[in-house]
Each structure stands twice: as structure tokens, then as C-alpha cells.
Amino acid sequence: MMLRLLPAGTKLIGVETYENIVKIDLSQEFLENSLDTRILDEYVIYSIVNTLTEIPEIEGVIFYIEGIRIKIYGNVDLSVPAIRNKEYIDEE
View (cartoon, rainbow, N blue to C red):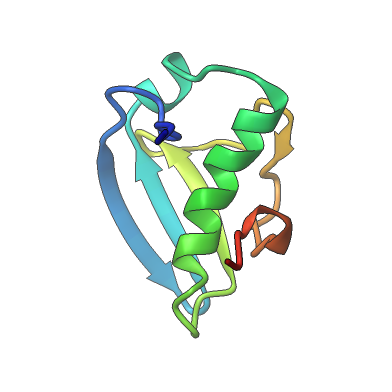
């Protein structure tokens, strides 16, 4: 069974890179349609972060919602760039 991790209706507004950090800008639906559970919040954030940090030059991700930086998503602290978290990688 596949589980949709990104909240329904989420749109990518933009992506920019500053040195080794990616700024990802998402639509308001990312917050409004969140399932808001601790485990899913972490999986949502780290599925994005771990995917982007597969690019060798990228070390972290900063999240924006319609141009405004968010510093928390559920229980995930985003006050600093989010970095790769191997706890959320299935190595099989």
C-alpha cells in the first residue's frame, strides 16, 4: 500500500539553492491539509529532505510557505536547515 506523504493539494512554488542549502517554497495546502501527527510530520519533512540531500552538493533544506519561512512543522523543528536523517531511509 502506498501512502501519500505530501498533504493533498500541495504545490511546489519554487526551489532555489544557496551554496549547499536548498530553499523550497510550497503552497499553503502543505500546512492546511497536514494530517498533523508526530510520525507523519517527520516522514513528510524527511522524505523531502532526504530526497534533496541525495544530491551530493546539498546539505540542508529550508522550508517556505508561499514565500514565508516556516520554523516548525508539527513537532519538527525547522528553525535551522533540516539535514539528512537516516532514521527515515529504508536501505532495502
